[in-house]
Image (cartoon, rainbow, N blue to C red; front, side):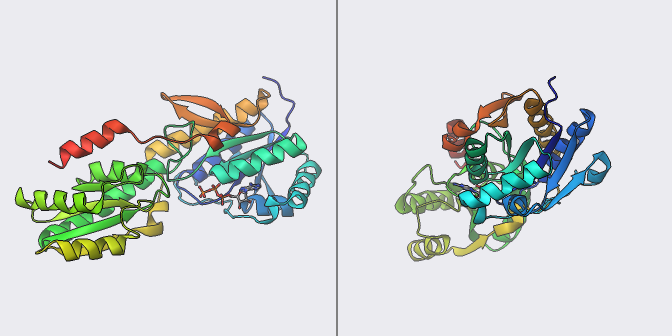
Length: 328
Ligand code: ATP
């Protein structure tokens, strides 16, 4: 293994997700294993421009594998979007003797990393951290699995109250423009309908389907709605429409919000984060740069950052069919 890089920096950027701490721990410990130094950068690109660095060794990251959020804090930085800001960040890294940067974040953070590399030839490596699972080049982003479990737990609880009062609940889940969270939790939580941006069910068909469920003997219903779904302008308008067009149902809305991003990472996310950190550091030490590490066919693979940014994830059509059959 070539060891030209003597020091690696790691930062978390954009929205936080469970598993980011486990990934930081893995990057730090992989550096220690290969006897190179590691520095943590606080507050993403903002801290990079300010030189807000802290030397991290294997013991600095004890007790964090099970913690949600990110010990390095995350931020969105306007300054890094400017050439001047990136120049300042580059100077900070050079002054600190850093030879490579691991960025844990979403596609915006990767775009910043790629531009930074193109301008200064500085080696960068991405680790996909977002609950939305909307990044091309990995079957799972860090935090997706934990968020699924958090949401399913919430749906189970809402179902208890829905069935006690013959209620119809619209539950909005995160996912921005993609329906990966909604589709999975809808199946796992036994939802009657799942509304995702990739599929336009239409309001009339929704009412038709709910009426059918009612006739088949269901007295309460759960409809999972992805936040990016376009069927209603928003989930409250959706409620109003169904209220007006269906009798006998007491319709309620629950927007789960930011609780979906928090909590202790699942076993899956901890293992994934550990694997991604090792792959990111060792790939950089092997001279590879401008890649994102990802999980494909249960193997750690590298995808060029450019492809990871531009590529689109696809909804799993088999899951769509399963959900249709399950709502019979
Ligand atoms: P999330 O999935 O949670 O939104 P993200 O990484 O996509 O995470 P963004 O807010 O899009 O989050 O980006 C994070 C940061 O990356 C921005 O605040 C900015 O500093 C940097 N960044 C994003 N796009 C660019 C760009 N075109 N040029 C330079 N920096 C960028």
